[in-house]
Image 1 (cartoon, helix red, strand yellow):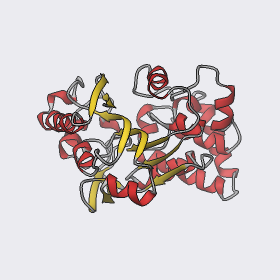
Image 2 (cartoon, rainbow, N blue to C red):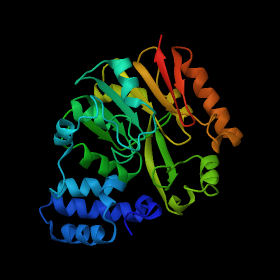
Image 3 (cartoon, rainbow, N blue to C red):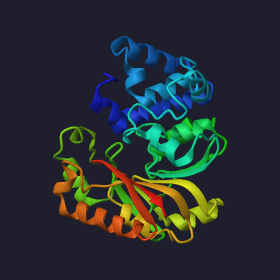
Length: 295
């Protein structure tokens, strides 16, 4: 059933959605509408529960697009997705950025451009930005999600400290090249169902080089790093004395109830903190993320 958590996060489910989306964009809506009708008859809450199904529903005209939703939603100026991992994200952004319909962000580990996103709602408000996503299927979903946002580009790369290639083990939003993280996911409730035996390669690129080639501003508003165990390599690939985001949101393991038990992940988090603390002060941390603000 499409609303089942394991089904919704599995790569085969994602590929079914992506195939239907591509058919819709090519003008053939018949099979997608039939699939949606069958899905909703079995799981009436599927659109609300699965952002990828919501994306298909938007393309079929069954629910409003993101710009319409932004106009009719009255929960506040910033409207993070329901599964945003930053507690009180809207209030934090108001404090950091004010109420702005323009700005520039970079989100590495863009996933599908909506689920768990710290920036999708910024793009819908009119911000420009770059999503970096290494898994081909999620890269395409992110492209489709942000097609209505002209200031947004989506890059199919993995961040590292050098040019090259990396192999990822597919595990939905936790797809990773980190052996330590892969081993941990196989044993953790809520994660094991997503882990696939399938692997996928992607080109790597330092973030500084990517920003240079993209024509990004040296001073920008927000950098989000959620690259599943490769945050250290991502930070080593950018000179934060040159590229100066006002705020950095980074996934951290040292306060997580499960990942904090894995020495290699904790050590990597501590290295990230040391790099950031050369230019940034820690604003807030929770079990999954830390927010740093430039001094």
